[in-house]
Amino acid sequence: MRAWVLAVGLVLGRAVGASTAEGLERWRSGDHAGAVAAFQRPAGEGDAEALFHLGQAHRLGLGAARDVDLALDYYRRAAARGHVAAMANLGITLFQLGRRAEAMEPLRHAAHRGDARAAYVLGLAVFSGEGAARDPVLGLAYVLRARALGLGLAEAQAERLARLLSPEARLRADATARALAAGAPPAPAAVRAPASSAEVAPVDAAPAGPHDKPWGVQLGAYTSEAAARAAWAALVARSADLPPGQVPRFLPAGSLVRLVVGAFPDRDSARALCRRLAAAGRPCFVTRG
Image (tube, rainbow, N blue to C red; front, side, top):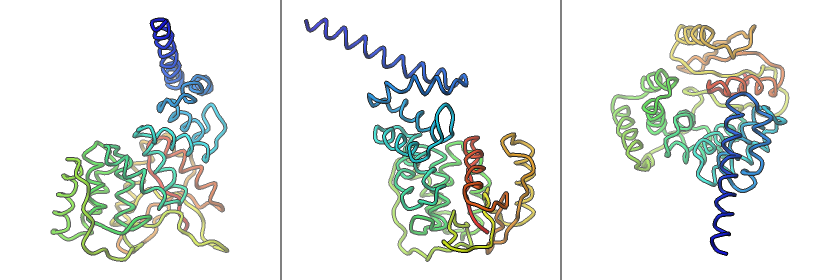
C-alpha cells in the first residue's frame, strides 16, 4: 500500500513539474494564453515559478487581462516562497505605482539575494530618500552592487552619483558595496541628511488636486544637458520598444538634469509607456513636471 501511495505521489509530482515546464515553454515561444492555462494547476499548489509567471501575465497583459493588483498578489505569493525575481518585480512595481515605502522591503530582500534590478532601484531610492531614509553612501553602494551584478544601466549612473559625493564618501560606498557582495547587512548611516529632490527626482510625487504640469516618464538624471541628450540619442538608437513620436524633455533639478519622455495629460498614459519600457528591461519612473 505504501509503495502504491509513493508511486502515485511520484506520478503527481512529475505531472506538476511537467505543467510548470510546459507553461515556461509556451511562455518562451510566445503562446502566453497557453502558458497561463498551464500555470494554473501548479500555481494553485504553490509552485513559485508558476505564481511568478502568472504575475507577469497580469502585469503585462500577456495571455491574461492586465490587472496590476492581481499581479502584485501573485508576486507576493511567489516571493513568500523565496522567488527572488518575484521579490524584485513586487518592489519595482510598487515603486513605479508611487507606493515607495511599501516597495522597500521586497526590494531589499531581492537586492540582498543578488537581483541587480532591485539593487539599482533601491540604490536610487535610498540615495534620494524616496521611500527610505536618505543615505547617499548606501544608495551609491547599492548602485555599485547592481553594476557588479552585470546591470549595464548601473555603470553610468554609478559614475554620476559618485561625482555628487566627497572622496571620503565614495570610499565608504565602495566598502559598503563590497560588504553587500559578501552578504553583510548594511550598517545605518550615523547621520542622515534630509531628503532632497535636487539629487534624484521623485517618482509620482505630484500632490493631489489641480496641476498644470504634464505627466511623463523619467529615464534618468544626468550631470549636464549634454549628457542627458547623449543618453537619449543612445536610447533611441538601440530601443525598438520606444514608441515613435515621443519627445524628450531635459528638466533641471538642482545639480542634475532629468531626462523625461512624453507630456501626457494623465498619469495612466505615462504609466502605460513606463510599463512598456520596463517590460523591455529599461527602468523608468512616472513623474510630473
